[in-house]
Amino acid sequence: MAAPIRVPGCCRYFQVAILLTLFILHTHSESVNPDEFFTSGHTNNWAVLVDTSRFWFNYRHVANVLSIYRSVKRLGIPDSQIILMVADDMACNPRNPRPATVFNNANQQINVYGDDVEVDYRGYEVTVENFIRVLTGRLPPSTPRSKRLLTDERSNVLVYMTGHGGDGFLKFQDAEEISNVELADAFEQMWQKRRYHELFYMIDTCQAESMFHKFYSPNILAVASSKIGEDSLSHHVDPTIGVFVIDRYTYYALEFLESAKPESKKTMGQFLKVCPRSQCSSTVSTRTDLFPRDPDKVLLTDFFGSVRNVELLTDIILLGNVTGETTQHCSKDTCVEEQTQKLVYADQFPMPI
Image 1 (cartoon, rainbow, N blue to C red):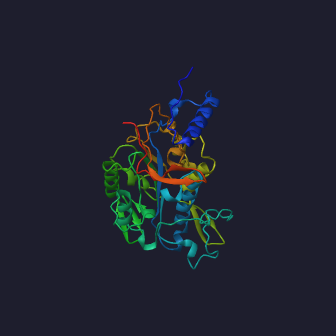
Image 2 (cartoon, rainbow, N blue to C red; image 1 turned 90 degrees about the vertical axis):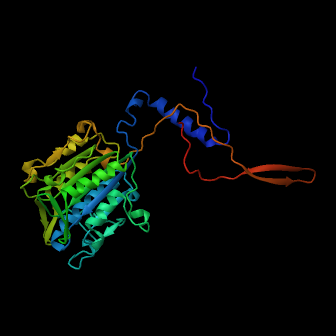
Image 3 (cartoon, rainbow, N blue to C red; image 1 turned 180 degrees about the horizontal axis):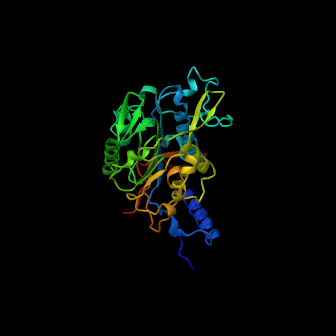
């Protein structure tokens, strides 16, 4: 017979939570393997989504980044853990025939701008300096929490970039550029400062492969829409808008993401094979040598979702008594003193050493 579980009497709701957990584990004991918990080693997910282009004819780049934004939110990453950088607000562009909308297909079925888009860096805030500062955490003290990448050593981070690039660089608003060396050094700073557990880098631009050639930090998986010397092409035009509305690689990547659900068993290995040359008209390139795990065994939601795993501990955690004020309740005949507990927020839930 199993030994009884000891729970502090002052926290009765812990008993309910533990009993419920045990019931779930018991009822699913045949289908759930506890050894599969935390196989990825991460406890939280973040996304940094960047569109570096300006001007109306680059409408598709805004649609690209907003489409990825919509997908990661649908798969579970909250706005509080997404940094969205958009260099030009196409929804409010005076040339937009349908203001406050951005579409990624000619049928205008899905408005990817939506009603709940939270853009963290907009317009001229989208600079190389701000992007590097977000990644490395070197932001001014006055920077609000919503504009910070508050990751740690247990964070899986998705970095998606789209715009116009060349061999070894990506342009920001046709005014400046970030080189592949600068990007590689920024990721190394993140690793040294324990700002990520694993990182997935995804880029859709011309000669995109060149942007991850200089990476040297561990635990980075990367995919690019084109090889060096190749252009990354757009997919189709919306005649009512008059411009291309999405790029080829992002279009087929979204087609794959839209078929996934938060509990999906689709893998990163499958995602890396999205958009063969017959569809993309460019050669999708990947880099896996810095990534220790087999992409075919890495869940898609390890980067594009935010599935909360539960880790069960067998250790007993002792919680200190909460002191409160003594109050006196009197009736006609007697007075009884009662100690009322004063509840406070703990800085950190105590964990066994």
